[in-house]
Image 1 (cartoon, helix red, strand yellow):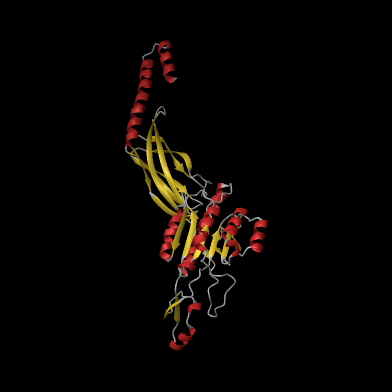
Image 2: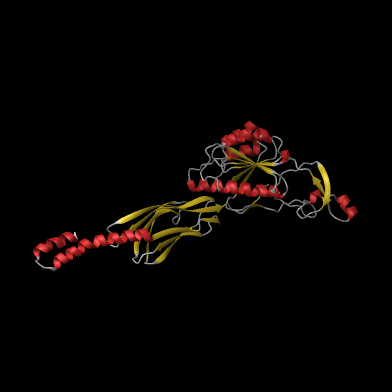
Length: 385
């Protein structure tokens, strides 16, 4: 419009300055475009660090380094990517605007505070650079990534049930699996050994603590069923319950392994039902890594199918834990069909955020041998009775 106005004025006012002004106005966009092309070629965008490992709700950040190697400023620069906004619990496509002075570097800090565990990817898709007059823009497609690994909370079953010197038990019971009662050998007492395994008669004779070494039977290992299929209809609550399930399972698993027992975990994977047996504490890190990167959406496979699929092979296991956010009639039917409802040693763990129906709770307590326990998923410590 300005060029058109000056062009008209060239005829209205027979002045030499008007053609000169028109020429300048015609040259400016060309000059601005040339500077834009040079700036576009001179600008560089990098991301650091490429991987961050953090805990849930821990403040962390990814930095974008935008470098301008030319003598003209670059303003604005529009960056399009997947970022987290305030009060969001996930990533979504956002647009960032910044500028870069000549021959210098700008740093854009992207803060994150993720409420759920899992693997997140910060992606940069496009960078748009504009000319000085804001008449033109050039687009550069990018595929820059930074990985965020958010770890599950480490929860702890209350340790108040360990034996005292008088071998009395407190109200909370230690979470553990049963060892075989088969005697294997005698050895010296080591720190962490259970007092109930001390051979008191031999200890009195030798004046030093002697422990009975019992055989570890795989058939007597504990079993944990993990329900990763619950969909509450609320994305935030669903992901919270998914985290609560696996964090509770990890805590019980770690306790059982620390008591030198083995444990088998069952859960629904993305494509098939999974089974992983842990017989020593070194195996725990693998399960922790698998649970950390599990999909944050409910499994399409039903929990009842998982119970029915693996129940035939757990008949001789003495200790069974079932961790599920939702206690409904379908699960109860699966307990009845597989015989779990009528056997002892089965503990059903649920969470106070999703209350079981009074009918289901009454049925479990009065018509089955299953122990129903409700815990607070936000608490770091919990009791298993």
